[in-house]
Image (cartoon, rainbow, N blue to C red; front, side):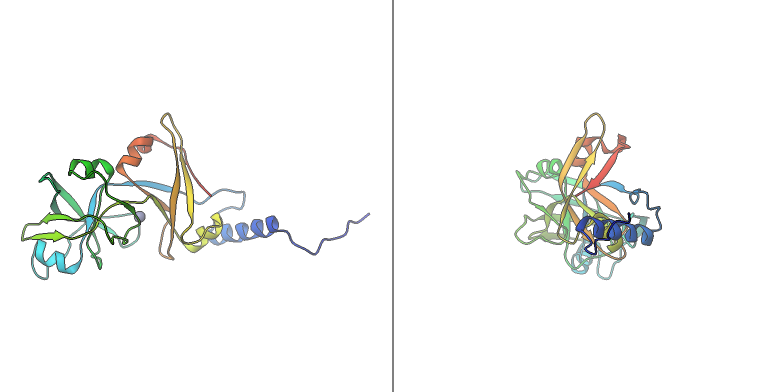
Length: 224
Ligand SMILES: [Zn+2]
């Protein structure tokens, strides 16, 4: 006896179809294999605006390309600065990442912030610097007093729209990242950032990476 076809497609079926389409779009097989995930630790670094670049490295100076970063168009520059904290403690060789941005920003791990004499600096998404602490930045050609811009970058994942479909997430969502191994950790607030030019890539800071032994772990999993 032929069974009747239910014309109503349930939510699970819709999600399965969307997932399959997204996988085909990504060019992966449809046997549930997820897109390849690259998890990286970002060392402390600075992003500079044009105005601060002029002061720190001289009027009209440009960043010098040193090596590419995983995300298209981003690079580590040869230029570095010294940052001075509230009690005259300093960190030298603070690397600058390019390209230049609208606002200067310094991304530190908690250990870096403590080393500089800060009891705390806020966890923020890149670019969201209102009300954050500042510091003195010393370059080879001049000194800038940043009024604000020091953050601990929130752990986040870059992905393109097809990958967002695959994971069923949208901008502003948070996901979980499980890092296996002897000191395994699951991060519960991995912020989703979606851009057509992005490659699937989790960024955490060096404290987070060291806590879970990221460089030793071959077992990472990103999920909702
Ligand atoms: Zn990032």
